[in-house]
Image (tube, rainbow, N blue to C red; front, side):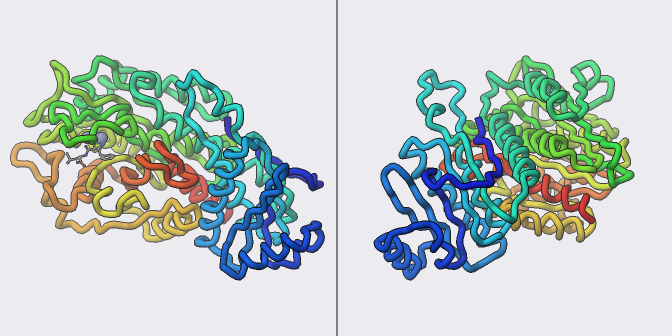
Length: 478
Ligand code: BES
Ligand code: ZN
Ligand code: ZN
């Protein structure tokens, strides 16, 4: 369970406290003794941004800064993670934040950092001790942040938790059908409308990519649409999100062989999970925007009827694709979803996918590789919200030279580009199925952390949800 975040009017002086300050005099009203004041002063001199006073029955933290902006907000989230660890080591499940600076962004950052740090995936542990001492309540006393804003934050964090849960579920608990069922199950609670296309509908729609990848599987594929269309939507043409839903990627007949490369491949539906999470955050907060999420899903396995190199698939839009590597499967299922998206005449389409190892090689787990055909303004806005949420994106070149690399001798295109520029040729492949302004986000790096990464946690990070929520929210404020 995520901690409950609520606004508090009066401060219980005995609670475990986090003070947000930009001036030491602000602490004068709070009965710190001389030793404590000396200790705090000393730590500030030594440029410590987060000071901890252990009063045994009470833990007090002082977060001091005179700086502002995206970098400082991220430092606050990281400090919140250190605070969380200390609280957890003391089995503390309640904390109060006292904002004495009136800085909304910083108060939200500390709250968000704490709440995101408290995520645990312990559903399959039979010993429940961990959940007993999880952080349950965060009270926020701030003149700058309203109850509504905290409620909004709560909803976004709930969506990030849901996204992480989906990514962390192994394929024996979450196959393509179970993923689709999950979306349907949550529809009433969130208010979006969802539909699932089963295998015969997918066949009728001639989704050759999705069906091709699914051929080695014993489970059927699914294609889920999620729509949020409020009456007060600001846009005429819908926004569309598309998420890669490979519930497990073995590589197929081109079985993944490098040691360890299979271990994390339950994360290959990270794009789908982030699309579902973003739709949850947007609908629960009732953003006045018309938006549709599309989730093609299947596992990718070797099997007696599995597709093999040399096969030629005919896609939903009629293009033929020569398969040269069955491990380049994400682009095949996304291609059908992207061409299906044409029918909505969308304003903008954004796809999210754990698409290439090449994106990880290029920038590691620290950011998302982006490219596409949308207006510079859209990329700039996404980049800006990337820094604000610390879900940073970097735009890769999309020159026409790369188109040459996916030409096939015997079909329209091939699903493999060669060793160089692998994330870009994957993007180029996708572009053949888009007829609208489009942004591709390759989240293979940041989607899943092998080692704990501060408040982003270990395992599924939920990357993309905070980024896209704020990107779309900003459109409603113009
Ligand atoms: N799911 C993988 C990409 C991936 C790698 C995601 C690491 C997360 C972490 C994708 O389907 C894949 O296997 N891509 C291949 C493509 C290649 C065969 C052209 C890759 O990147 O190696
Ligand atoms: Zn693959
Ligand atoms: Zn994959």
